[in-house]
Length: 208
Image (tube, rainbow, N blue to C red; front, side, top):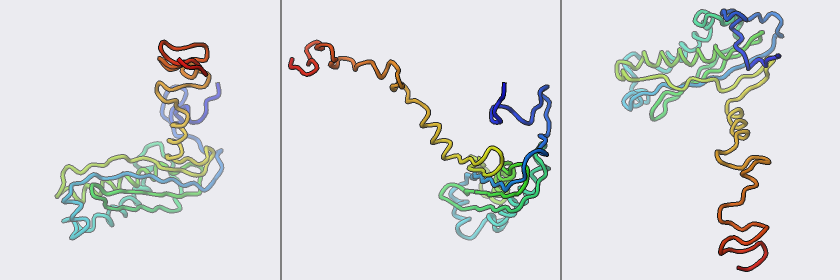
């Protein structure tokens, strides 16, 4: 049976052993990936980041550089990632009322994608934020690190918001009618039918 790429684990061979995927037959194309995440912090940390800063210095600038460095070192951290030529990395951090929001975009012209590089950039930037604020908030934690979009390659473009919308559209509502199903044909309990009166009710087109 022919499995689609998304239906199997490509880093595992037929015997179940881990392997690095051979990408030599793939075309070199421009590829991008965007990932996001956040570091949940205390109100005091938010106050410091928006004002005088934390004891270690400029937390956001240090985290930004760390995220870029993390993207470049991804194959050293994730065993089966290919070393590829990264064309560009951008890491943006912003402070909200409860978190430091992180977004990373990575670009390449190569035979494999850069989703892991984008995720690593976000994760390393997040860890760096924690290192910078832990003297004030030992409970800071990373949350919701995920790929938001990718472009290029054989599988084409993918966007999280569009994928979620498509899945919701295909999923029938719980207990709702289905196309040609029983729920669509079943009259409401106690309601009128086309064939006759309901107990004490109206007939279709007639009076009680």
